[in-house]
Image (cartoon, rainbow, N blue to C red; front, top):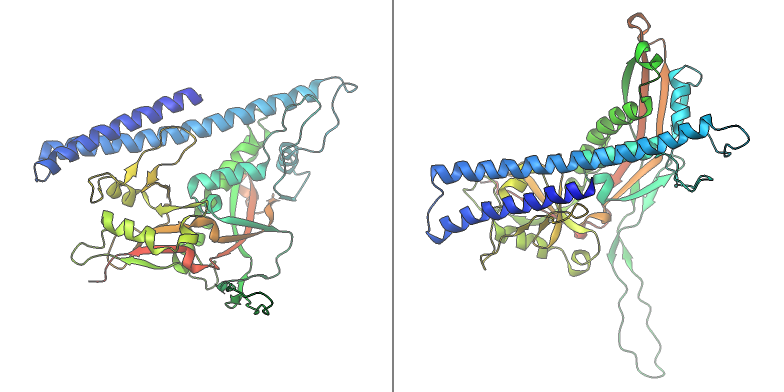
Length: 398
């Protein structure tokens, strides 16, 4: 599977080289693309997007295959003679089955470390981990941020540093002056509840061939991933998280008469608008939506080099000016006064999560329709204590 993904990555890189050649010819001849060239370039751009979608699907299939293999090992343990069966804790799959049968009404799934069974094989991926993996696939905020997991939901205060301590040259036998760091007001992280309902027919539950755990993980992961990622990206901070875009500071304002579009110089200036400490920390990178990424691919710096570099292997991110670029569907399109690009030390954004993911079951809510209703709940908040570490590009208002 990984070899085929690598082939897709290589073909994507080849397509990108063909797209660059079309742009380079037009640039050398100091003209716009012809109708035929535009059609070809758009076709190649679509191929880039299609191959990326294929790569992401293959990665998901690979993860699903690993989960199936683990589940098969679990089934083997169940049919093994009792004397030979390893002693183990109750798995998430067993919990889900119990909920589906009505034996259990409520359960909180929390992050678990992988442990080893007696055979040396890892246990199946937990429900929590499956949901979070899918949520990260929907949007990057649970991937690029610093995640703080707490058991309870009381307010959590995060310090924000305004100024570091100051060192000075001190002569021999001279007293050393005190220099304390200066802090801004503490940032408080609460716990906003995100919840929704999933309904399954009793026939689906009674069909033993259906993987209820994976089905629910897909539903919960996609929906919570979309909602939570959007809130952590553009939340206003009033009765919802203070999103990274909202909390970030202005790095670069675009030019006039370009409908909020950015240039290669704008992106370079955005990188260097972040101070050296923030820019060089591990985890620094860009966030923008797919529309902005498509526009960014054709940009060149003053030396004539493309600012975009496609990833060449399945474990890497595409690069923009040497930094990883993360596609975030919650980011705004390029437009007047729109904050369409983020750059900075993305782990400087803190996400507070309370407990794990809670699942509740009801037979009464849709009894007349023969449906069993599951309610999924996740409590999160987010904010950016060090606003100087993340900057945004904003289209000019005029």
